[in-house]
Length: 212
Image 1 (cartoon, rainbow, N blue to C red):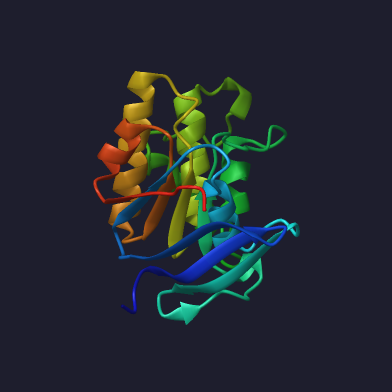
Image 2 (spheres, rainbow, N blue to C red):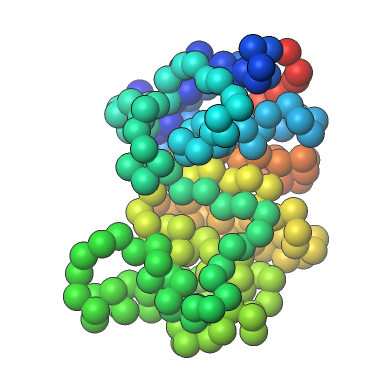
């Protein structure tokens, strides 16, 4: 397939010992959920896809995104977005400035402000551009982190346990929002989670990694 994210015969090892092996394709707008015990290499797999694999790991196999082999591309050129457990908002910047950090280079100041305002409106946070991130609730922070990542215009989305620190009601709300925004942009998504409800909500194929 031309559109989507493909993992071709990916094998990751540490100290010469194989840690995980996977070959999967994720179509645009679909979610692949990766589960498995701690230490099996779920987050390590995401690091390989983003180009940030720690030097003490070795990896083989190819990563193809929308028909382009990105296996050896630098992280900033891969067009892969990722959300973590922590929102990682910059505490010294306003909400709007945090979102501006995600914008791709170019455009007038007015155009950039319009993109930020539209992004906030999309997640029910109109008028929040000048707010201090410290004044936001957990769910609001999660929404800002999501839109900052989407403003970078990624071609794929990786989710590394991003809902795990939210309470049950908020977790369901943010999870639904993330999946809806990704689907609206036709992004292939890989979700790493320990939570069966997250996996069920994703609605796609589930892969369980086991130690090799």
